[in-house]
Length: 134
Image (cartoon, rainbow, N blue to C red; front, side):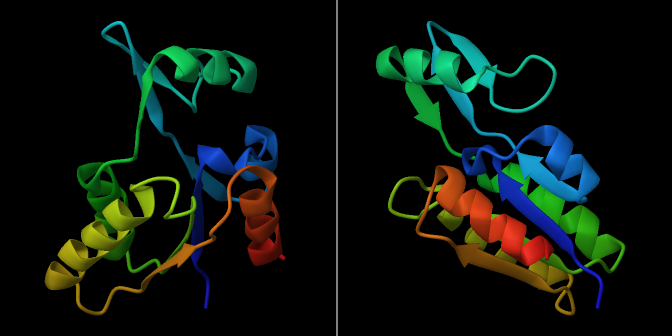
């Protein structure tokens, strides 16, 4: 069975590696002085910039609606999904993914959406993603 591997930017995987290995990296955000900064994409903050801004700002998890849109898109085309998540004790991101999965399964009960709480961050999470790709 072919499936799509998803993770989030907290895995600290290079975007080039993710592209080469067909892994979708979802971004978290940080809000500071009314400005929302992203952790993926062309205008993403570097790790150093992010850590500096986090000291003065507040972070935000990937929300349920974002996960729902992503999971629903894969469910519509019949693509199974494996989301390898940031540690649930460090963020509400994992719980948002679980809630979104349950919502999508109401409309697509045959969809396969697996979510793994890595209980890790940074390269601990990244290594698990790499093993899943293998």
